[in-house]
Amino acid sequence: MSEAVVKLSNVWKIFGDRANEAMAAVKAEGLTKPQVLEKFSCVVGVQDAT
Image 1 (tube, one colour):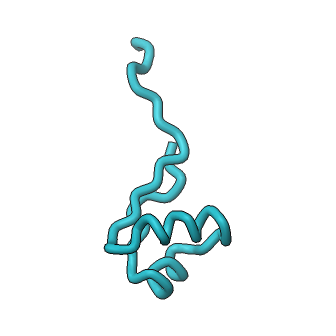
Image 2 (spheres, rainbow, N blue to C red; image 1 turned 30 degrees about the vertical axis):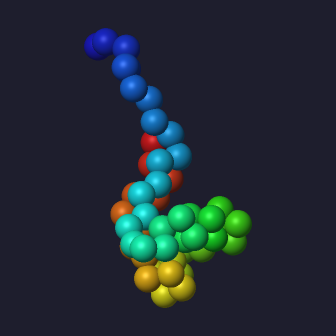
């Protein structure tokens, strides 16, 4: 098997108009996916993937 060309860690993708605010709140407050949806009307599509 060949060596990885690209390595990603701690990847997030949040969908919505307030995605930047939601990401900041996730980092600061540890919000869950349902909390992000309720508070920011954003959907967490990818959460801390490696």
